[in-house]
Amino acid sequence: MSKYYLVLLAAVILFCGCSKKSPSNGPITPGDIKSHIAALANDSLMGRKPFTEGENRAIRYISQQFKQIGLEPGNNGSYFQDVPMVEIKGTPSKTMEVTGKTSYSLQNSTDFVAFTQQEQEEVDLKNAPVVFAGYGVVAPEYHWNDYAGLDVKGKIVLVLVNDPGFKSGDPNFFKGDTMTYYGRWTYKFEEAARQGAAGVLVIHQTEAASYPWSVVSSSNTGARLYLRQANKHMDRCKMEGWISDGATRKLLASAGITGDIRALARKRGFKAMPLGLNASVSIHNQLKYSTSHNVIGLLKGSSNPGEYIIYTAHWDHFGIGKPDAKGDSIYNGAVDNADGTASLISMAKAFADTKEKPKRSIIFLAVTGEEQGLLGSEYYATHPIYPLNKTVANLNMDALGNYGETKDIAITGKGQNDLDDYIERYATEGGLTVVGDRKPWAGGYFRSDHFNFAKVGVPALDMNNGDVSMKHDTAWAKKKQDDYTANHYHQPSDNYSPDMDATGMAQIANLLYRLGYQLSNETTFPGWKAGSEFKAVREKSMGL
Ligand SMILES: [Zn+2]
Image (cartoon, rainbow, N blue to C red; front, side):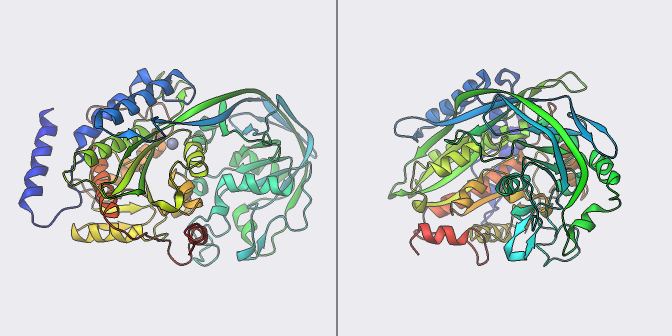
């Protein structure tokens, strides 16, 4: 306790002693954030999986905190928004049998993962022809169509993760190494369904996906969740999934395709290649219809309560799964995303405690189902409680850094909208720098809840600590990030520990606090920058 007291004291002294306001300081303390992480990432919450007792405990904790802080219930008298979902627990056949010139038995989980969104007890693919369809992209603005002249009905397409621009060396080919939405696996599944394919497998490559196969296999086994839909998702492919790089190479080699398949697929005029192989696989499904919950609290604005700033953080994680090498089977998700949820609660307290109340209303929204495809935020964005054209901004926190304060602040998908400019200003004042994505090829802007707000036009900002540690040598933060990605991301070892460094989390939370507070006292609406794919939908919704 004394350590944090000293840190706090030092921060207070610094804060009072400076006429210039450092952006890292503010009312949100690392100690307060840590107290909530300790609660949310505790084993008793069983990994915070939707529909489990873990959900009940997580949403109870968050709503009780909101109540204690003095937030009003955000949904017509309730702290909860129902999110109707279907859970599909798919068990694929142990092997995918591939026959043709040569025969292979691909092993479930090590060579491939397969699932379906179709709400059927059994889906079956028998001797479906396999086609290598390059990147699986149809992008008119780049004059690119991997499906041109191709009939994929009844077939399984193999498509590379990421987009043709990746590692092309040309920043103007797609967006170079910056992933466009065409590179995201969700897009690959959507496009294959539009084309009428029976199955789609995304070819995993660690560099292009930005995470190792272990993440693919651990995130895609067992039950998956989807928002409930009237058509029972029958417009989707029968089978969706991933295939390992190694397994892909074996299949392609038997069709005489070897070498750098990315280079092959990014060539202008690339034509999809039938492999002369057929694959059989089946998936048995157990269906369960259930309702999960977003938690929502409101701090009514003092003079402009009909306009809103929405803070988001996802409360959910993976529950209890396969034990790791140490026998730990509880996915506590301390960093992902107990720390963002904890910061959301601390944020709410900071706003409730301000002497001068914000003029616009502030919404605190802890969303469900992020890990299963950003579902809670999609539900809110498509069933908004507060009008979207009165919603000034969405500010999102997901997996904030656990390696202390940094001299640089990383804005996800930097350059999208005017919210970046506020952060740039605060940073300059405080002697910090602002950087874009650490891994622009990872498609970070499409990977957390702010993306669903962007899709409906609300300017949305997601940011995190950068690479350059305040206290440690230059390699420190990068090393910590890499260690987290390789050894803890979506693994049972993403645990809370009392010596976790939450000063970086507080740094980001305080910057976002300052931004939200400033926005709440303005009367203007920030917009999207020219060229952003989200500008048109906002202008339409604002009647511009
Ligand atoms: Zn996650």
